[in-house]
Image 1 (cartoon, rainbow, N blue to C red):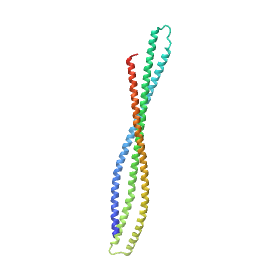
Image 2 (image 1 turned 30 degrees about the vertical axis):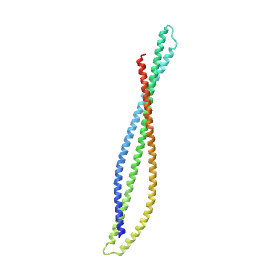
Image 3 (image 1 turned 90 degrees about the horizontal axis):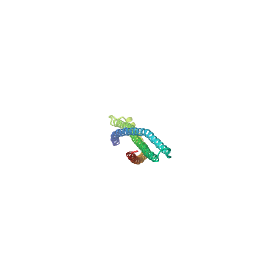
Image 4 (image 1 turned 90 degrees about the vertical axis):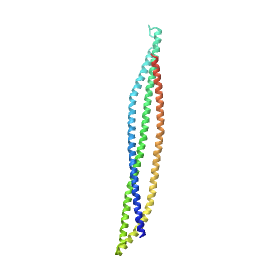
Length: 269
């Protein structure tokens, strides 16, 4: 019968298409899983970078506190020497004041440089944390892509089994129709099966339409999520250059402070 022959060709073609689709999805899944592994490695490196950047801060803060203490000490020494003690020649007292003022200036410059280093380290932490957030988004996006592909592969299996069952049913019908001698009761059963199959196909068509609508809604949801992740990545990408610019500015300030300290040291006490 032409209908059964057409159904056989249709089912075989559908099975071949499913096999090709599964091969494509399997290859895609492998690539996506590699992307997840790479993103997770980048996140680990970024988290290590945050830890290293944070570890730099306490020693720098301690150095800044020590520099502040030296400033306070120099200020107190200058305050104590603001009045000339008895028995000290005015020239000696003025020289002493000049030396104390220079010590205070050097201490203040050193404190400024120490605090600049703390600021630079804190900005390094912020930049490293922004990198971690960016890698978190990459891991989430890659993981979501893997889950979608795995779901698509899993969805192929019931469809494959359904097609194979229908193909076996058609082959059975063909065998009954071409049997010699014909069995009337068997042919009647085949006719009933064909009628039932027609009704099933009509129901399947209706179900497929509903499934298509659901799939379109799911696709729209996935696209929306992808757009949200893309926007988040773009925001993080804008934050990183700003953090780098702040770090560069801090480094310039630190270099200027260190140059000023060097200049004072070269002038002598």
